Image 1 (cartoon, rainbow, N blue to C red):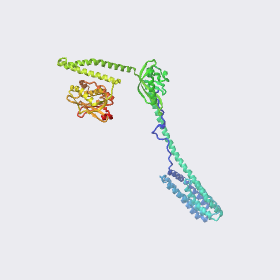
Image 2 (cartoon, rainbow, N blue to C red):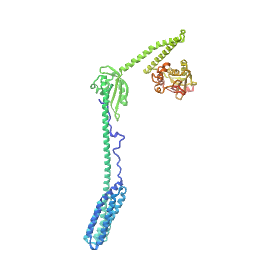
Image 3 (cartoon, rainbow, N blue to C red):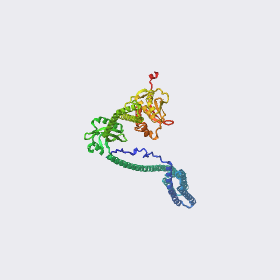
Image 4 (cartoon, helix red, strand yellow):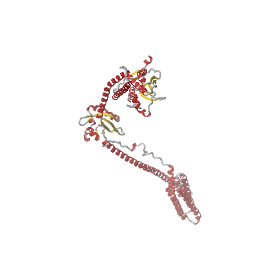
Length: 607
């Protein structure tokens, strides 16, 4: 049997988990610049090697006796720029803070490109006018190739390429423009166009590389996100597996408990039809599971109790709150009606929908019958004992008072003991009858407006003889102010008599029991002060419970049932009041009750 309906939990329901998607941060411009500078320096060795090789070829082609000194000077410049560029590349490779110094390294590279381009511009300006036509064509082709070939090498930063190409083409364009040849002049006009086209290509390539680095950065971040996502998903899957295992284990345990439970357990659908029952329910109602599953729950409710049951069931469906200790008259398969006590609990999902209802019950017929018989026995016995006890106590009082003549001292001592114990037994019977009335809800309370000071004076008069019998004085602490309360006069006298008698019984001989009256804005407090032994610390929590006595020996000697304070608490609370106690300065205890004060109307105030 499975009585567990656990709602599925989604990952979106976890308030503590990290968000799986977050706003993508913008790539760091410094990092992109550093990547571009890294690309430029990675290709710088190609520029160095190319310049050295092409410079050697140009030196061989331009080598003529009359220009050897100038060619050697130019070759020296090429070699110097090659060494300087190689040193710059080596310094960059050894740098440990390339990211923070990316701007500086780019400026150094720009200066290097400008210097290298100037060397080639010097070659075009110096060697082009002084050589033959074939050498001029070779030189023009060589310079155009150098300018064009540098595009991919310096495309990581188009300004660097622009400096390099300008340092080559500017002197060469000037030479072409001033050569005196019309065709060269026209070529000089086309060189800037060629330059601008190349710079535009380098600009576009720089943007392409920049976007590529941004994409690489974003892809790296996306990869990290996916890695984190997969890690969190794996963690959630492990958590779900563990939760599933725990739910399955809990389900097995609950099913085992339900099967072995000594009480009837049923699972009922929200439509009111039985879904599962345990063996104890089979024994209680006499049905096999196959006979009950799918049938309405009203099948097990007696006809007379069905209207009330339908109302309770509707309340359960509307409020989604459990019903505890519900006494329902059920009917068995053989037609026998039994009274069962049920605890009904709805299982509700996150959407507030009832998945099913679990009902746990037990047959209370025998217990209710036993309690009824016990009450009848107690009530009958108490009534049967009160009549002869009253006669016995009356006869003993006549003997002890000397109304029928003198009695021997030893006999008088025995009759006095008999009278005290008879009175104690009568008090016990009266308290038991009151307690049974309280439990049965038949203890009548009639609240009315009365003068508390008059009731208190009456209580002092009625208990004066009792306190004198215990050799204790009974006094009011001060003049009793006139005040009106909402209370039952008879029951209030009963409470005050109980508190005063307790104070007298447990006060030492010669002590004084004081009764006081205090008035506040909304309540009236009546206090009874004694000089007894006080209330032990371990007894304070149960002093107002039934059959509770702090000192059983003293209670036996002085009389007491242990029911008086419990009855007083019930009576005071029925009159919307409070009762409690506190230690008294100098020894003893103070028991007090508080009752709601009667608010005077405007007419009463004027009168």
